[in-house]
Image (cartoon, rainbow, N blue to C red; front, top):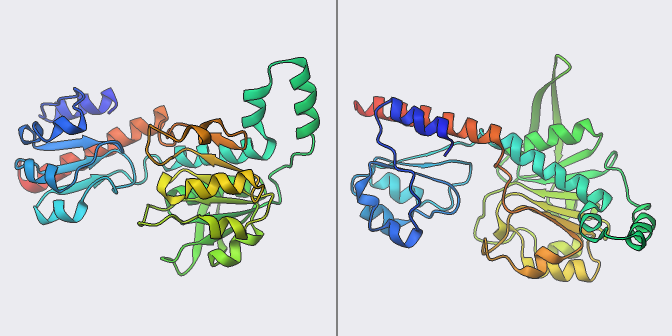
Length: 307
């Protein structure tokens, strides 16, 4: 947590411990605390919740809550807090960075450009790369991050479709050049959208099954790219590698992986993959916003409790 957030908590009367406690040791210490603030690496499941008999809140600095047993915590009277809006812009910017990297082959050029021979070979190969303008983007999920990404892609004249089974329509409202703009994107089934998309970007929580696997990659264009800044489990990594190696798709931009930080080394060294180490929400601005939002929510919680 940013120092500003720690100091703000102290200012409103909290004693704050920022010493790192490993997951396996946390169960032996959790009962010392009235609240716990975590990121994505720490899992707060039933055993930890049962051990934390003093807990009044579990706060997650970020969007996803799949590392917290939310229903069980609420059943025990523990408030669960997260910051769904604070890091949306940062994650969307990274997703768009992967789109640009893939469209021009930057991931391979940066790793291979070491000599005059490489210079000539890569110049020849990537003189056939494409602009993103006019290309079609399929957004899987249309929450805050996807909406921020859609704004950026509209600015680059990309065409956007949305797949989200929980929405009836995909409406976007935003300000541009002092004007308020409202636009609606076409909603499509995956089977309809995948065969026609140049880029596919995932923005959903993990729902127990990979969204993109062998069947889905088989529907996509050979020139298509996949971007995942959501959860590593949303892509079948084995099927992804097969699709890349057989040229069924052109590339992938990954910020999240299964088994982090022990990521499959084949993924990390693959020339068709633009990768980053789960840093979507990790900007200075996002961390400040996350800290401020968490402190505000925790302070309101304690006021409601009468403490």
